[in-house]
Image (cartoon, rainbow, N blue to C red; front, side, top):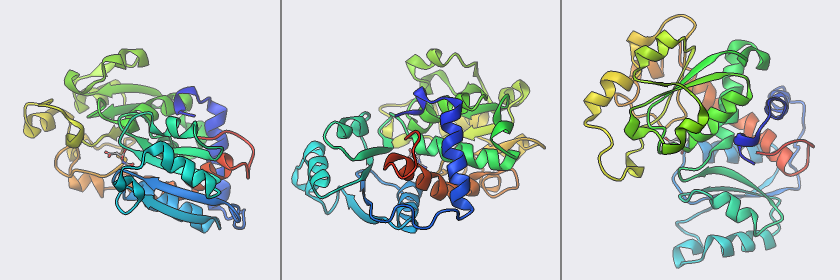
Length: 299
Ligand code: NCD
């Protein structure tokens, strides 16, 4: 599923289970499960935290990447998925450069397919771990309702934005979009969120969370911004924007000095390290739900 269909209680189920995992309430809950990590696009934190999540929980974990697998020899995603299915996969965690790849993979296997990022599509576990980190900072899941979050930057190319916006909404938060029109998807009106022109405007709007996105230059066809300096003058989060009660989040990888200043990344208002740490319990929870170890929803 994507977070576009998620209800408040679905999100609560995942986050509560992640909290129980953090409290060490389960002993090797994924023992006996075979989990393939199929990352066909670069990843540091997502790949590492899925691997730790699965291994700490006792699963058999096999990592496949495009380089070094038969994909390099021209094998299709479909044939790769069928192969992993016949090898006894209980879950496939898939990252792929094409939007829709995880949904396509699900058609060829009985195993649970978990989307770890599909092109400019979705990145549901990122949004769930963001909600876990934020609810930890605010004092609980119910504290999220009514909070205002500004999603700042390259929304057009961001699968994170496409999961975080409905994810924040599912938790009862209000969302605004802070981006130049050249970095907004044409369909962004469907979110019904106000579009603001700068980080300063977002703070005037009452943002308590500045959720900053990387400028995804590898996905940009043609010039979308006049220059990094001009982009930065409106959309870069720096020390000037920090004030009590405002949290800064970023899914990583961070381009320091482009969309966010280095001193903000490491500062007291930054939840970025908490977001990374949240990846392990949240992804363990998602793997447990997806493989039927714990009944409930899957991401
Ligand atoms: C992001 C991704 O790959 O979608 N990172 C992540 O998974 N934490 C965001 C990005 O690449 O900018």
